[in-house]
Image 1 (cartoon, rainbow, N blue to C red):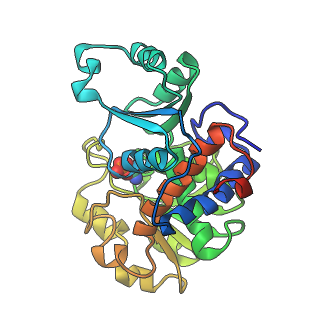
Image 2 (image 1 turned 180 degrees about the vertical axis):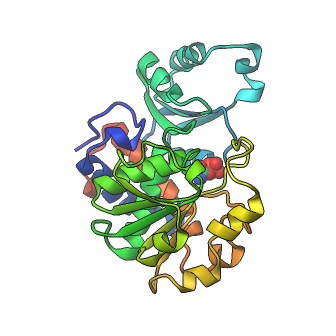
Length: 313
Ligand code: CP
């Protein structure tokens, strides 16, 4: 069964079975890591363009590897040195990429909704690699995949998402995905960093970290988005860290085997200590590895690929 959509714009728009299909498809995709020659013919003849208007290490590189390992021709556009710097509009850029034969456009943009505009403009499949505060669907898919890989299931788990929920597209995509797969989601952070609509999305809200951690099976720690932070939302980074930082002492009071996730890049010593991020409870590096497998699965399914068993030749 291929995806029912031309594009991947957010987990809000996917049904549970579509999310599960991506996760199931990523399992055989991950097997490619164990091979001497990391090459599948799956996307031979297809062209993928990475169009990033914001910085990225993990997402951009893993999309590039995902495309290359499936034999697509991959081009990266640095918007600072493209005609975007001369005032080219997003629609114009999209039409130009279409004229150049792009089959996939992977876009990160500071404006929520930018990938939707591109998706309406071109016939190519558009993948949202993060749009403003809206969604970062492939990050949530790799988080879900990592939870399932480490804990064996998602249904019924208690997941705490801790930190700057207000500015976080990762939080929004995670809430949609986790709720659809039957997890209980609690978001936790300073009241000023929690948007009013999270309850509608299926999450509980607390400002008390002890309460959020008490029965959590998974703690997803968000980056404090210093570059988006307007002054006055919390008194100081030190106070934030004292109240909401994930430390060894706090992890030791959690359930044994609690899984700690962080999408990266982390402000070590602010929202999470290095000791916790590198501890056996944490899956920070496993998340990055799983990002390639999940993005391979997304590209494969958007290209019309079928059941997970047919994936790896
Ligand atoms: N998690 C994430 O999106 O990281 P990058 O900004 O490095 O892509």
